[in-house]
Image (cartoon, rainbow, N blue to C red; front, side, top):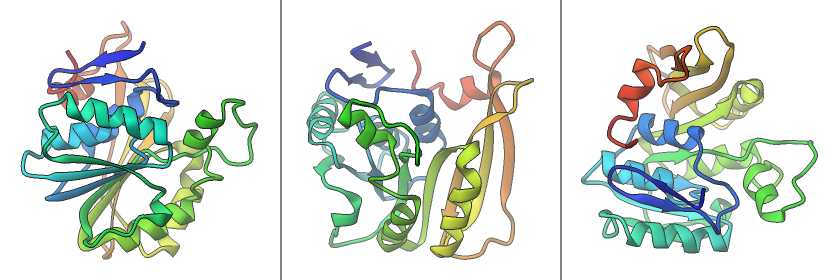
Length: 230
């Protein structure tokens, strides 16, 4: 599908290696926001636009290492109602040094490591952690995040142990964690996590599933995405 329509904006994705997917929608609908939001690895611009919709006073910066993705994300932003509040920049996060920090950072990071790469170089760039290791991601997020800010991500459960250890050694502490199942009977496949720079006295833990037995959206998923899905 070259175009994905949401209630308040549409996403064209014919020039993006990574298309609109459930992971991005989940993170965009769940992540904590603020006045200044950074989207690391924006791709189509989906999460940046979702954050702009959810937080009407926010200024959002979206960065990506893929020049073609940035071009398409800019077009998606310009055609949206949020074009005055979302800026798309072509940059690797390691090379990104803005004049101010952010009180919210979001990322749907690449997570494949030591696995067969996609022959499409741009898909490999978007999906493989060789180009942005977990440690690089956390180090950059720690540098860019304000002291009282939140860093929200989504990660496959099978990568969680490695991900959590890298977060800890970078100085991050979990404030929220939400496990996601496809259906009630199946094991968790994804985990949504919010981090802060200070140790939290309580951590919010939850688990939800996306689909009922008949394939319809679960009540939780329907409520989470009600402002986005048509």
